[in-house]
Image (cartoon, rainbow, N blue to C red; front, side, top):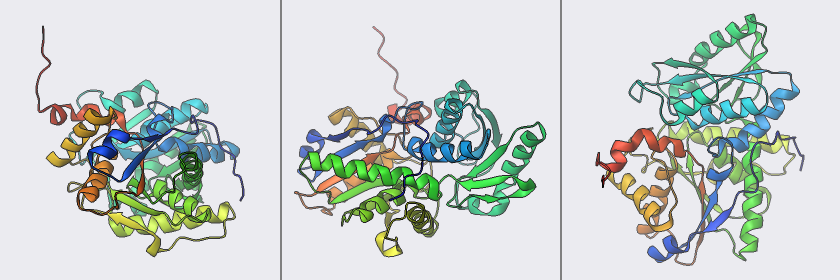
Length: 358
């Protein structure tokens, strides 16, 4: 296996925690949580693992400015800004508000973007499969060209599975869920295998929240490359279509396999994405979802956000209640972070109740 260089950003390996009380509450299966909320960079999360390889590749090519896009409360944007600070680079964030109210104050991830000194631009555009069209990158290229004219050497990263190529104005463009970033979760799969061996347990299932599935792709590839028959279940967050996610998972996974010289490939038959737990779309919630977030916090003291990890856990617990797993199965849930997104949902999470003042 080849070893592309990483730019160290994360505290690795992250813990793998057996959540005994939650497992017993449902009478099985055995639930383990891979705590990638504890990767350490600016509140942590799964994007840190991806950015280690993206930033390393950009530094090698002399890039000093990253221009990227995401939702207004994006974990990707926040961690990209933090990674850029670590690497002495500039981060420009094109944030999309169409699925959310236009913010009137700094809150959640948006506050952290500000503290990290990112250049934040807000546009009225959706975060969905429309972002996968080439025309969706026009705003990014315009801003990148603005920086190029100032003497910077920018690169555009959009939220797709594309490998590095040259785009408009001769500016390079790559995908945040492309082959290079997927390598981070191939390594995460290797961590999980080693940690489950220490528990003297086999991994029957892995459950992870998915958007375009870059993290899912890496985990699936890493397990398959190591001879594991583990089923990887993706719980859709509602941003992209299922077909777009599956296509991205195959493309980025097989691209990463080529980079790493792995003698295996991913096919659509390997991929299992569930869309029935996304609450109707990206950023949307439901009472059952909120109840699960509160239940896990109450039982295990573990926090989940309503946009990603909460939906992943909602899917996992719904599958448990439907009898999907055997009582003896070992299930690893990957906590991908996203905790700053809790704060903009405060009214929904608290039913607008007020603190008791003594």
